[in-house]
Length: 492
Length: 103
Image 1 (cartoon, each protein chain N blue to C red):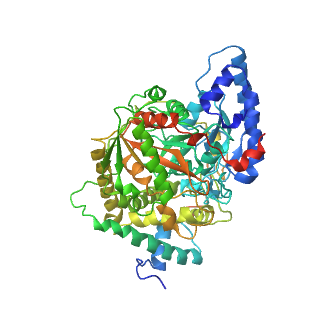
Image 2: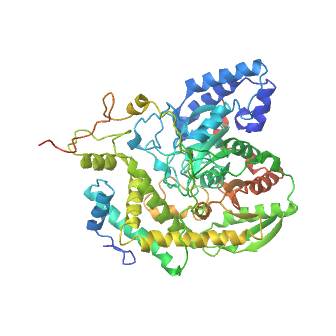
Image 3: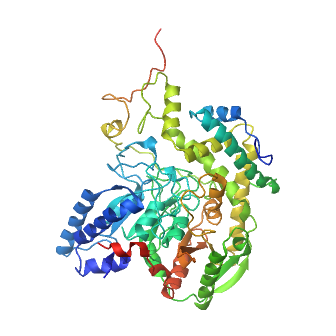
């Protein structure tokens, strides 16, 4: 039996029945990581010693018959933008050097409190800026479905670690699609919760009004388990919501009677590849057969989402990344005589090309003389985009769209043209601008056997609707049970 | 030559913005960024199609609400655990080049 590709809830059962010990499971996971990493590069660091120690603690509890938390003993990957106590956190940037934080982020702490087993820190685009995972100073991550292709970004490592059976679940972060797009391109489930649902304390800030932490899993059931674990108010994040957190697993469903699903033609127009369109329309048919009512809606400002996003996220980033100055932590250029030169040189040498590009664009948008024409204008359009969604959610519970306009593209294909790269997030970005939850889940394959995903969007704090629709879809489809064949010969 | 559809951002403007951002750029980076930023800013100009007169700007999806936590005394992180991360430090301070010269 191929344990690597079991879901969290299946593995949990095996641990409970003592069919496998947590130590054996952890060793299996580490062995697979070591075997596959030369090909995939999904991890920046593997935390083997910590993992084995935590696994033995879980085994001790199991043998004593102690009650375990829902996620205890499950091998986990964490995007390297998540702060981990005494474990280097690099954000895939040279400027952070071997920064070893003195605390854990809140979402991280919650998973460790449940005794999940940290296998390692996953690779990503530097400071979460990118859609292909090629902007990492630790080298690009490869897509396990085709090693010459990108896995998507920025949480490419977290997506690949789950897609290739290295770990059973992982956390990523999503500012404009950085969980959903790589999930779509690697054939796993990726959830970006509502802005405010999960504390951002201990997530290295990229664009603070857009960033959100969320899970990668193999199915929607696992996604609900992970969301249960990381949600909730945190006094350390003033933007975290005090709204109560339901048990998301109670919304797992088999039919969709009484659910109304919206389809917007703006999401099926120019730029969408035909085979992606076909798969997403196929998914909509399945939802209809499950009892959902399908309704046409309109989101007329969609085409303005990308320019709006690239002004807002870069403006916020230019401000957030001002803290990397070579003074308090990370990398400092040596032999400098003045403080200003120290800042400029440390930043000039420490940041990669895309990060510099965004700091520059953001600084431009905030410059006096340009502020009203660019930053304020974008903030106004953000209101219009948000209003579009609010209107749509008067009539429907969930909106269905493609996640990415194309399946995974080739490494290097879009690196020369930043603007083309930005367009790969055209369907995910508006969800962040409006602060809504969104999930990508597998719904087919291209002719080249590359995964295709579709996106479910719901209203603020209505993740339950997404869980309901997504889980019902997965009771009658098998797309999420397909795994990359490239790696099938390398079990162990 | 730049594509005429691009918004022109001069090398001098790039150097000015880089200075504001405290970012040292090489001559090659300056000339590449002037082209790339020009292209991106031109694309962003599509926003001018929309009349936003009277539309409230939105800076957060939480609708501008702000909450403060209760003020109270509690221990902060141990100084050593923070100092050890600084590239240069002594027992109690982070060290930087001289800011104000004596005399």
